[in-house]
Image (tube, rainbow, N blue to C red):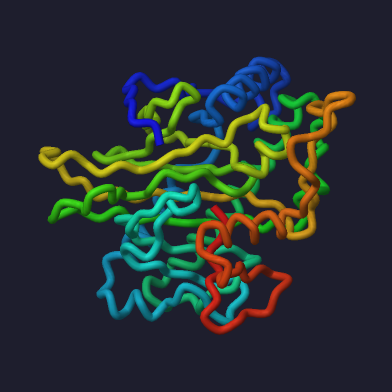
Length: 340
């Protein structure tokens, strides 16, 4: 990966209030700004989204309470399980995201909880009692925000506003909360909080926290740049499936979470909440009409999202691993990590 570093972030901030309030005035400007961001860097920070802060605080607090439990209690929740729509827990260092880009590395310095209504997981724990209600309510709200973003994306591409709606019926979206603990000992060489990777799906909606050691994206010029933290905002990025849909006109940008400085002068523990908006298993991803060129074949053949997700997952985790989706029966020991 490129080694350059740029602290002046090219990630724009876009106020989507005209869409969340149904005001026609200003919508064209939002569409133009989103199109430019998706073509240039694939990331933007969104304000005016209408998500109550109390809802964010609820899932944040319930998740933090879980991460503060004794290890033996947390580890009772497995990486997969027999419950459709159950919970998945990945202990510290159990995932190495840089492997998804073909880079060999040791485990990331993070602990995660994952949930998706279309994924197999373990039974929800009784402690903390608000964990499942908080997660399901947040998932519902993020799905509504994603629907708004889908309509903005359709307009930015030059399609009818409802073009994507039938393609997302029964979508395989998922929710992940990530705990990045304090680092009392130095990381191993090359080890990060989250290694460089791109997301598999259509779009991601991320709530970040203002603490040392945060999110960076890699620009087209090959420089790593910090994503700005704006209180009350969400970071939105497009994933590989959307880049494939647009024949690479929109870019799914590699990103990572870096380690805090060795002497930060303040606590460095941070927690992020990510919603991954994924297509249904059988939805076909093929070059969208506005990106087709007469006499030039698309860069990619048509493929269903399920096939594509399996392909990317095997690339990251080996040919012996597979995803367990809603259309599958759970298999013992199989990893049902939501596609990110």
